[in-house]
Image (cartoon, rainbow, N blue to C red; front, side):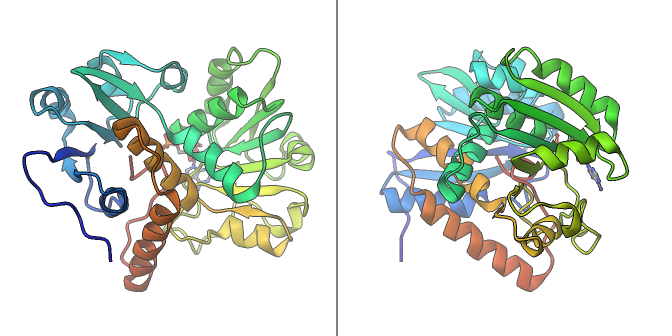
Length: 311
Ligand code: ATR
C-alpha cells in the first residue's frame, strides 16, 4: 500500500483547472504516482469557471504552485495568459500543462506526445514513414496530427463528419512538415475517397467522441468488414475501455490500442515537467484501469477521452 507524504511546509501543490472537474481521473493517478516516487507533491482538482481563468492563473504565481494541468474549456484561452508556450503547444494551438519555472509560466501540450509514447510502448510502432488516417478534426485530432507529422509520418489524412472542419485543419497542418502528405476527406463509408484512404492506411486513430459513454451501445464508426487485419486501430476514447470501434477491430483481427495508455502517458509527462523525474507510468495506468473498472461497475460514469476530461 502506497501512502501519501504528510502535508507540511515542504508540500508542493499541483492540480487541474477545468469546468467541470467532478469526473476527472487525474487526482488518483497523480497522487498515487507521487506517493510511489516519495515526492512531497499533492494534486488537487479545481473547478475554474471561464470568467475566473485569469485569476486562477494569477494564483499559480501568487501561491507558487509547481504547475497545473488545464482541461476543457480552458486549453485555448489560457495561452494568452502565459509567459511562453512551447513550439509544439503553439502548433497545436492549445495548452494542457503549465509549468511554473521560477515565476515564469510556460505552456506545454502533452496530449500528442502522450499518444506517441503509448503507441511506442504498447505496440512498438513508430509513425516514421507510416500512413495515418485520423478520424475527427477537433482539438484532439490537431494535437495528435501535429505529433504524428513531427514524428515523421509520410501521410496524415483527416476524415471528419463535417468535411469543412477537416479542410480547415488541413490548412493549419500543411506547413508542419512540408514533405508529408496532408489530406482531408469526409468520414463517410459510402465515399470512395474515404474507402481508398482506409484501404491504404497503416494506422487508424479515432479522435472523435463517437462510442464514448453513454453512446457506447451505438454502432461503431467502422464495421469489421471494412478493416484489414494489418491495420493498427487506435481509439483515444477510454470510457468504455473497449469501445465499439475497438471491438470491430478485434473482430477483424487488427492490432488495437485503447485510450488508457495515452491518458497515463500525458499525465506522466506532466509529472516529468513539474518534478524533473521520470514518472511510474505503469502504476499510473493500473490506477486508471482500477478507477475505470469501479466506474464501469457502478455504470454512472460521465465518459471521457484523453483530452476531454483530463489534463
Ligand atoms: P475536441 O476538441 O475535444 O477534439 P471537438 O472539437 O468537440 O472536441 O471535436 C469532436 C470531434 O468528434 C469532431 O471531429 C466531431 O465531428 P464534427 O466536426 O463533424 O462535429 C467528431 N464527432 C463527435 N461525435 C461524432 C459522431 N457521432 N460521429 C462522427 N464524428 C463525431
